[in-house]
Length: 212
Image (cartoon, rainbow, N blue to C red; front, top):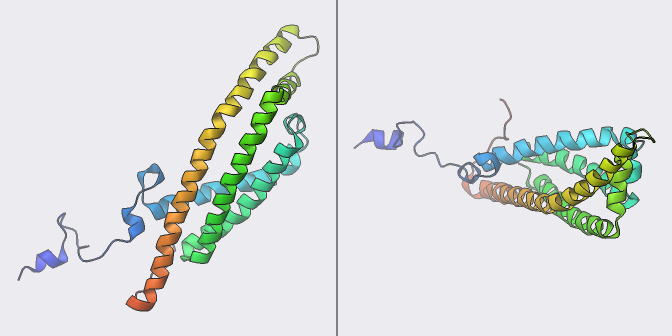
């Protein structure tokens, strides 16, 4: 009987017979394992949303904030607060293999897609009415001297370009948010099946990325 066949895989490593978790076989962003990819992404988003929340007091006093519409600013605040809370729950849920917390995180991802679609609608309306271009013009002119005529003309041109760039970038934001929601959903389903399997297989998985 060939014991090596049971103890070693084809590459000669002693991991044969150990079934890989589905999240290790599936790949997501950055071509890494699904579980590690979502965990890394969640930390990046958590840090970003934390910075947004902490800087709210400063940003509300800037020309950029005052130039944009109140609806855009309200969406910014809502997304930052919801995002920080949901990502904190998601990071903890992924680490502890808690399906209920990961599901809450997934729900936020779906809501975030909806908020982005709403932002696209509002931005398109503001672009069509010319308010978006005026907002970028105001932001640009706030950094110039009143008698700088050439600078004021450049602001008019750059404001139009920035408004177009804002419209063009939004569809990519929707695609990215939808992909993130899909990745979190895949991981949630894996953790859910993993939790249901414990009662039948008796196998107990350790929390993710937690040192003994």
